[in-house]
Image (cartoon, rainbow, N blue to C red; front, side, top):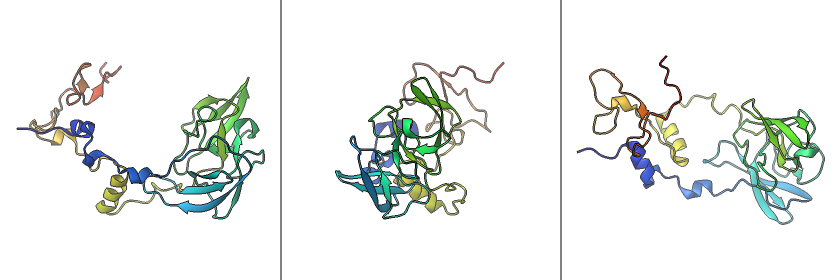
Amino acid sequence: MGKRIISQARGKGSFTYRVKRLAYKYRIKYPNELKGEGIVTQLINSPAHSAPLAKIRYPEGVFYIPAFKGMLEGQKISLDGKEVKEGNILRLKDVPIKTPVYNLESKPGDGGVFIKTAGSSAMVNRMVGNEIMVMMPSKKERMFHPDCRATVGVIAGAGRLEKPIIKAGKKHHMTKARGKLWPRTSAVKMNAVDHPFGSGRGKRIKSKIAKRNAPPGRKVGHLRPRRTGKS
């Protein structure tokens, strides 16, 4: 008798495939009202995030953002001014062209949803009508409202993928902290009872095109692909 395949087990949501809530205890978000000046009180190593986090204290309380390259504890940053300086939080309409920014809001007041990964940044490209064009890290351009907030600078932690992970235990703890699946076993190496692609002498791989109405356990491989590589 077989058992649930991995996609079914993850979908069920057991503790094996569920991230610990404590890992994401730091909420990376701008408060609704930001005025005056803030101070960097602490730089935090969060195992659930790829970049170090900065704890910012301002007159109304504290909040967390990804730290920029070169940030120091005790550093003061402007929260809603017009001075273009690394770490300052500005509205896009006040950011000059060709300035790197990160932690960018999708719409004014949502707290910041774009560009939070270590070593990444976007660049303010040009103004088109009443909107501002920003070059994203993927080299694609995107339009934003001029009142969207962003932090000036480049996120710290660049090069984190350059150092090889020598020991399997290191990778295990890194992925477990974020609730990721590791190690990932190839489907064709499994037994027939453990995966739809399992078994078969050699590696005669079955069709990877899942049926449109397939149940979760069978919906593996290519899901409703437009092109499958066949001419």
